[in-house]
Length: 251
Image (tube, helix red, strand yellow):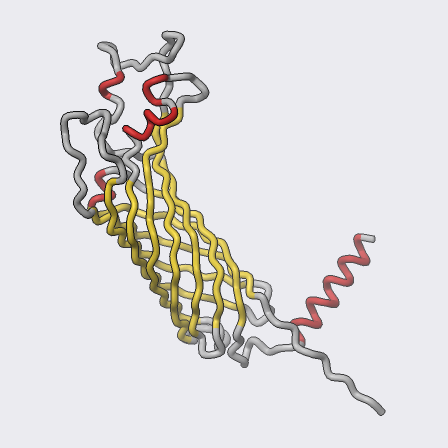
């Protein structure tokens, strides 16, 4: 059975490849993809977080003129919190925080966030093996949001449970723009398709909380923040090619 399925897959793949010539044709096709990146925060964001990982998904459409229109959602995460000790008012004279049973609590802080975008771009068939590969430029706009995640390893710590966490999490969000400059590759065999390059995100955000529990006497700023991310991103693409009709000949 396995051999039969493998043979069928091989026949179908060969048939699909034979029905178009990626090496000479500019193909219009939808595509979906997944990508990963490493980002360095800059401007206001670097005051809160260190290096961030990025995992995202995208979907879009490439025209026969190599224009691209699409959407994507990205999740960024890390464990480098640079904000001053937000839990300092919960610590005793020994620097410990205790749980509901009086035991020393182990609290971990992480950076978490996402951004969702609409994008457009252009592929220039330079340095490529076919007219569907080359320099890829993309830009767009969307929404960005992030916060500090507080984890207590299943210990119950009343001071940071449920809604109390909102007083410490620094929830922030707002409008964002982005740009990408890199290289996109669609192989002649249609089996290897990817892109990689430099990614730049500009966030124009605002604090979403009205009070920080670690700074109860200070007014939370409602001024716009400039939360930027710069980094490298690489992704795997899955074009969804339309099957061409087969030619039939009659005697």
